[in-house]
Image 1: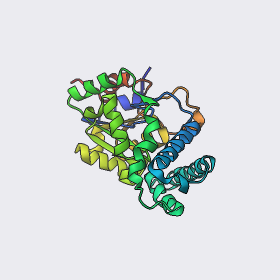
Image 2 (image 1 turned 90 degrees about the vertical axis):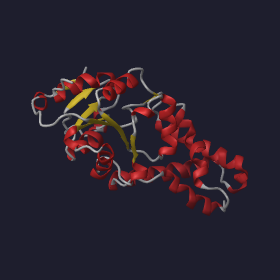
Image 3 (image 1 turned 180 degrees about the horizontal axis):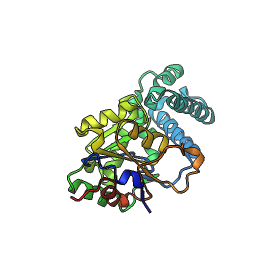
Image 4 (image 1 turned 45 degrees about the vertical axis):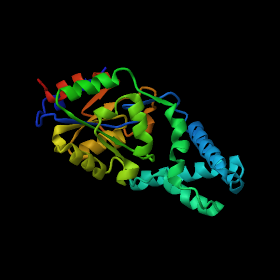
Length: 263
């Protein structure tokens, strides 16, 4: 059940005109959250594609390749945590191809074969599209801001398949923007797309430290979509959201209370 803090409910300083969303564990869900196992599958998919393209003789044994990719992606994740700079995982491939003597394969060609095994792992709950439609029909501008190492060419086909891409005209992925949440710049880019001031926009995401804190830091209201299975120690529990919910279907009602919206 959602909750709106009493203080926030009466702080009616703005009129809601837009909503921005996080992607993973907010709009889309995952059938399997064993990320270590999934990353191994992704590396195996990339390896298979490179072999199919005729470059298998250039590659090390599969287990060595997987270990190398695991190390590189973990280092990239740690770097993003420290610097808040967003960079695509594709950047890892050209130096690797150079070291293996692979000269005619472009990293961009490998994107979908590498990312492809994520697609089968994601879905949306039945209440997501109806909730977004309700917000759109109220005249609200909608958008997406995601911390991700995969570009639009990977995520947008998923959003189209899931049937919600048309409801999210403003979409920003950190590896393309160059900054990750909670860095202010990625939020400002999205607000510019909406053409709205931050006080008129709410942000919905599943992490206090990235989504709620980042949104509040630029003047938006931050709404937490709780993930009941997530251990509290994985997040910054000192951050206080303006409202909480468990299902996106609760959002229209949450926003009515949060902004005293009578439209």
